[in-house]
Amino acid sequence: MVCNSHTNYLKLPEDCKLDSLTCSTVVLESIDINACKQLKNLCLKIKTTGVILNDLPSLEQLSSIAYYSDGASFQNLDLKNNKRLKRIAFTGAIGLMDIDLSGCEALEEFTPTGKNYALNLKGCKSLKSLAADYAYSINLEGCVGLETFESRRIGNIDLSDCIRLKGIFIDSGDGVLDLSKNHALESITVYNMTIKELKGSLYPNLRNLTYRSDAQPSSVDIQNCSALESLYITSSLLTSLQFKGCTSLDNTRLEGNAGEVDVSDCPNLFLDCYGLTCLDFNKSIRGLKLYITESFPAWILVDVLPLSIWNFIIIILVLFYV
Image (tube, rainbow, N blue to C red; front, side):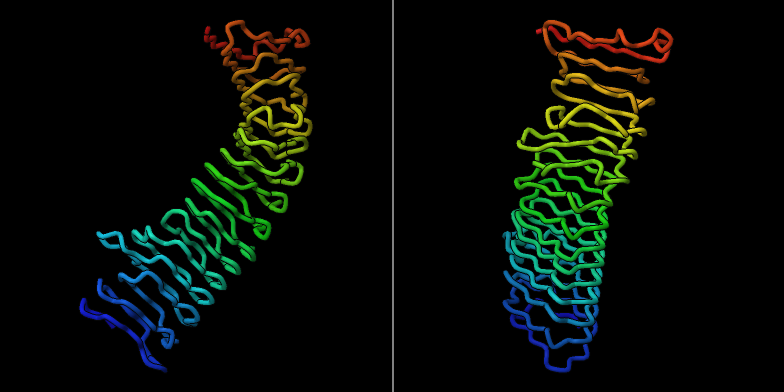
């Protein structure tokens, strides 16, 4: 079924056998298709502010929700309890403010559009990947299958049920991020957002940790991260610079002041430091790179290093005088 450009109201009758619907009209003011229990594919491009499409038991694909040149678009989208819905494709739906996909158990991947919206994905247990920029609230309760999450900016988010989460990337956030129950994490990249106390020993498979934030309070303990290979962090966030048990650590970049750095368990480490005024390390490392921004050069205590290891150390000093 295809609706033409003169359709103002659309209501389909009880026991409708329709399995596919395409509707593209700027004059449509309301739509009621909840009687279409056999509808599998739905394509909408309309100028109404709110759409309720919940409890469509056969719906598998929703696509082409678009806005028009005057800026009108969907603001509220209710798709809850569509248990067979697998795919949603948005095209320019920048006005969405409230998206309810709770109970969409078959949904595997979803990329919302817009800014400053609320997203409810409660019970989306098949969801594997989520990229959600500029959401002020995301409900992921029951998203036990989620493996990756990324966002350029996020407000409040609860990831406690995401027990299979392997990778997270956040560029900026307003709330406090709690990752204490996400023990399957392999990669954490977070900028400009506070992470609640982070203990590396909780993540036996963690290979990459990148955490840069001026927000306080926060602390990171990376001891006994035996799988950790790469660390890039603001030094002031670390509870200590003792890398005990980090036997796989290969590359580390520290920013900010640091005291003694214990790298005795990191035989293959390349240490990249920025803005440090004091550095004391107690064993050979594969390489050392220092960026010194003070007018008086930093001092480096290396007298504990045996002469035999100097052939394996590269020291690069980049001096910037103020």
